[in-house]
Image (cartoon, chains in turn purple, blue):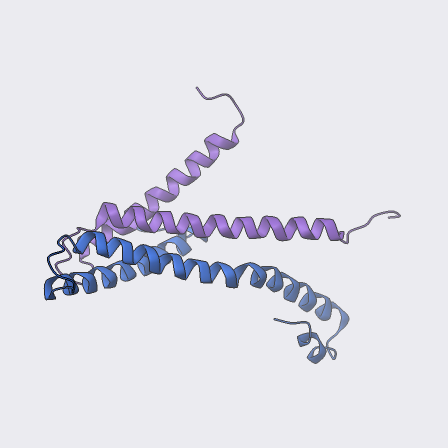
Length: 85
Length: 103
């Protein structure tokens, strides 16, 4: 097919680099906030021991799962491009 | 990951060479973002851990040095947070890959 240029230009490559970097930064930030939030919600401040007990482990798993769901939900709402209800 | 790796692969068929080159390019995109991010991540973790454990464990300033209780508290706090962080990391990775997780 004449005129079909599949090689990304230098500008496109820079944009791809930039977006990939932003994506990475976003993920790191997400992980950090997730970690801190779930620690606050699930672990008692008294620090009776250095191990996580079974209750804390379950709480952490569920907290991460719910946080993830909230992230997706908010993402959907932001992405739908309709005025908020 | 540097281009000199391609030199060793010159004996490969054209198709595979192209695929290797594309993979190495991909990794360079990753590596460019990965190392500074990793450094920032670790430094942030260190700082926030210190802040957290200090706030949770140190409340009195009658003396200059930490007493036994405060020291034990800080040790437990740090260990606990690091274990917690690793667990969160595992779950996060699972969710990122779209794996089903137990309820």
